Length: 86
Image (cartoon, rainbow, N blue to C red; front, side, top):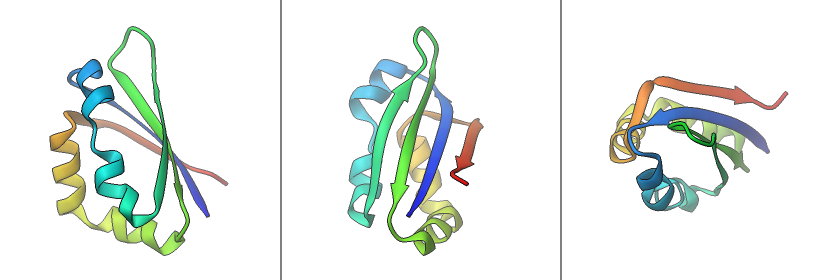
């Protein structure tokens, strides 16, 4: 299993918390999420658990799906940071 910690800034935190589509897009692929936010900022993040490690490479290489997901969720792409569990 692969675990990732992903953070980024969004345009509207309240909207993102209520409407992000992480589970709808990525959940059917077997990815589980725990969502976090930094109080009084627009910084949000999540811990993702990916059962199939090969799926991580597939997801990261699917720029169309990632781009659509980021745009739909109001992600400021220049602020994305991703850490992998070691």
